[in-house]
Every structure is written in C-alpha cells, then in structure tokens.
Amino acid sequence: MPASHRRPVPRAAGELRPAATRAAGLPGPDRADLAAYIGSLAAELADLARAADLRTLHYLLDMVRLEAEQKHAFLEARRASESESRDGGQTSDTRPAASR
Image 1: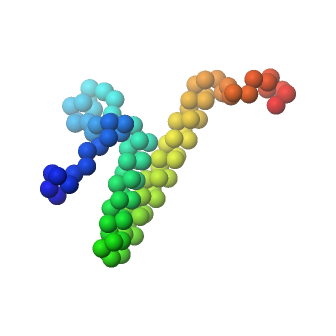
Image 2: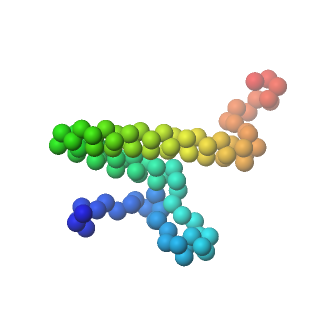
Image 3: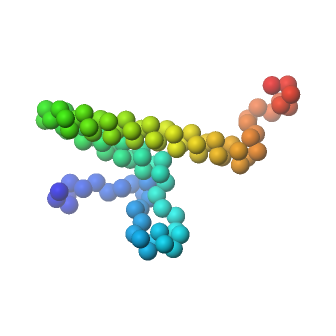
C-alpha cells in the first residue's frame, strides 16, 4: 500500500510499542480506544468493499467491525466497573444505602 494511503493511528489510541518499550514496562495504547479505531477502519474498508461489489470482503470486514465494537463496549464497561470499585462503589446518589 502506498504511504499516501496509510492512515496514522490517532494519539488517543496511543502508539504501538516496539519490543524494547514493552520490556521497559512503559504504557502502551489503550485497548478500548484501539478497538474503537480498528472498528472505524473496518467500517470504512467494508464500505469500499461494498461499493466495489466485493461481497466476501465486505462481509468479513463487517464482522471485524462488529467484533471491534463489541470488544470496545466490553472494555469500556469493565473500565467503568473498575473505576467504580476503586471509588468505593459510591454513586451520585447521596442517600444512605439502606434507603435506596
């Protein structure tokens, strides 16, 4: 693929880490953001495949999109759950737990 057609990974998804960076334990891309990015790329590619009447490619790319969207939703829900448990399970409801 020519360099002019490559799409850079957005900063929100982080940068893919080379082996030396991984070995040093430095943070890598956020998996939820990366799944969302992959899903958006797959959707664009699926549209191109559909427009070119490449049915099998369209189907496969649409499956990639669906998987990426589901993974993104799962990772976001897990992040919210972990964040809530770190905060002591407190919600915006200020009533005592017994009166809820």
